[in-house]
Length: 256
Image 1 (cartoon, one colour):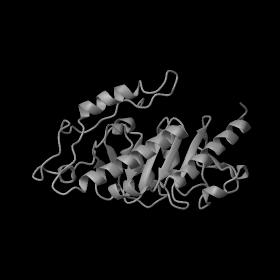
Image 2 (cartoon, rainbow, N blue to C red; image 1 turned 90 degrees about the vertical axis):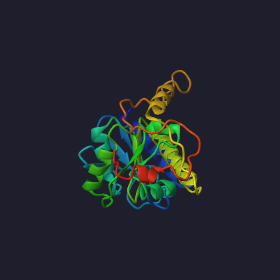
Image 3 (spheres, rainbow, N blue to C red; image 1 turned 45 degrees about the vertical axis):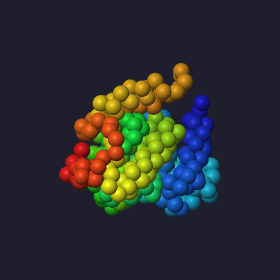
């Protein structure tokens, strides 16, 4: 496939993913952004402040890993620094950033999302919350890299989510799973007198191994991101009594 055709195909997939994030309620308006790597050093990104439904092939925006714009006339997303930092320091093929409601709510409450569901293993374990910094800043990009150590996604304090994958489909699926886990956590924590049961480090490791075999032969297996580290937690158990310390208090000093 020629470079031109590869860029055109990748841009179409990027725009479809961005529009899907709006349709699925993960972003509102032009909040959030999406990017995808083409070849070794070209990154296509959504432009700043342009509604996704208006994006056309002639609106393609591309930058090099050095941040220099090489395609298009529209300005790249304001979160370009965060996207490029991930590409420079990981094997990411695509990055999805959202302001999903439940994930953003959780980002204001915790230092990390506990292992409320086994799909946390697909992102590397308990999901850390990156320290707050002004959007679009190099400081935020640095905070994100720290939170993504041995992970493929994290929450951004008082901001949203950032997740990467081998391609746009995987990055988006992980984003949707993260938002869903945050919704489950909030729902479980809302029941007065009980604390959610959590999955142990050992169980997450077992799940990660199973996820490597998930899907049909020849498919890209989820859970291939190895070497993740999670804090030890209680083994799976029934609903906790009200006098058992709740995870918010139990982990409030652990930043992972």
